[in-house]
Length: 290
Image 1 (cartoon, helix red, strand yellow):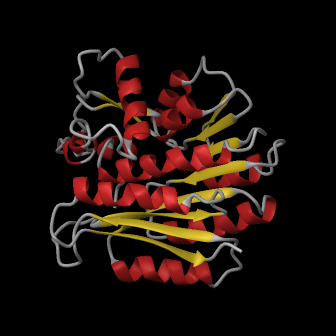
Image 2: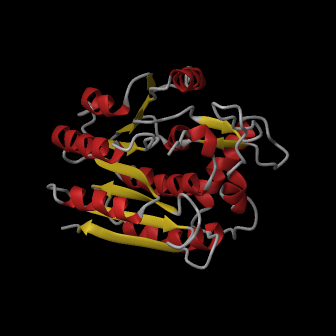
């Protein structure tokens, strides 16, 4: 499975992940003290949706954003719980020169976070792929309190934790090009928890084969864990022909009282992004809060 960010920018998985990233950051900002936002697989940072995604063999991929952010771009009521997220996308789109209201530019997680961070917060963005790392460094070259590192994100967990602030939000969003990615995540989480037990860690994962996903969750819960919240969005049922029927976000040490905020988002995401009657959402504690 090739989940390079550029190929899928603005799709339903991005919408799900970024919509949840907003309350995660806001939850940490309830305290005045700053924190480190660490993005282990940052990609290019932002994407021009009008540029075709060309595969290594020269074929052009169909754009995925019309079935993702395109379904939220218009028609959301003013009181929708997704309005802050959508406002950030609009802000990024306009900053990139699209002032006529057309959706052309989409922010990846680095820009979602950067637009929310306060002066006392910092960012560390990691990307191993050379061309994406170069684009990321160029995009954030003039941004204060942002460090871009061209290195493996799992290595960054050792290099960056614990930060001087003693508080961190870690987003682990790997490309899942390797069949061993779930194993790498388990090792990375163990390292992160060893170095900073109170870190908020959010791990994105695809739901392709339910059995493999459940095996990963079983392996995870066999380890000592802090409070851990599982959130999933499935845009189709198990019998659908889609390769990736859904995705999830595991949140270790979620900010206090964030579960109700996430639950408000999920019905809207399901309604807007579903492709068949089997669409469903899930929000449950793997390890409850104490």
